Image (cartoon, rainbow, N blue to C red):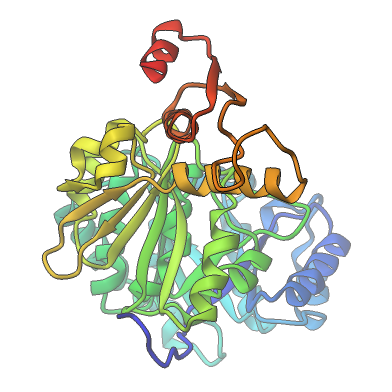
Length: 409
């Protein structure tokens, strides 16, 4: 049933810092620690007039938590345009001064890390990274790439993707689950958010979260990772539930459902899922681990054909907003909870305010009333159906006249 004694995983929460001054870096490090980060990633190429000897010593002697040093050149998506030898010297200096982690791009790592390890005396761990700004490679090509990265002698490897569809993230999850060395792997952008949130389930070494006041598209906040998602308790047995929608960033579902799971000691997580293609989505995420979905705009009607069974009420409304994967056979069962939840809430509010409509006390307070709906989409269908079943006179405003007529039939 998913109820277990949930233990902590080893995934760390990292706050990326792109401050333009050393003073701001220090301030952000303390903020990150206060918000619950385990480590900070400091982008040296973002610091104006960066002076390695002086600035690194200040940062690394005053750090309140572990530090991951990145000095990204322009050819790898960063801002640094200077001499490559000086850039690499700065990264070596970071190790000498006690950086916990230092990031080297795959392009240079093969030539550097072999020599570095022969005289490696510090406790610094080396990360070899690769940014893939092209189409997500096949599993076979990813396997070859990971082998190359492992061959450098890296302590940790890091792959950053830019997916065009949420189904591509399944390859990232596969990579996280089967890699032989610690790995950081995720996608940037709004479609990549779920790759951060579910990284602990698939044994990712690190998940990124932004600081309060500095939002980053596709990143949860450090605070939400700690408070809403409680990522330290996500593990391989965690059941995944999510909102299927486009867009999805507006959803308050995670802050409602995740605390409820924890309250009943259920090992589950509820995440937003930016879905472009329903057929591809359900075909890709068909395992029992993906146990159920809420359905939002614009899919409440279209999703019905992907359900194996549809509850009679949802069938009558012609819209589904909740899907459960039946544990016994894996079939997807579609329901509509919009109708009764919304209508009974409206009825309760009318009763609480003592409004009367001349009907008998045992009837619905909506009977005979005018019920005005703005919008004739999936949620509108549910409310129109519920209001008519209670005897209300339904009026619909929508830019699509034909759609409005369908709801009134």
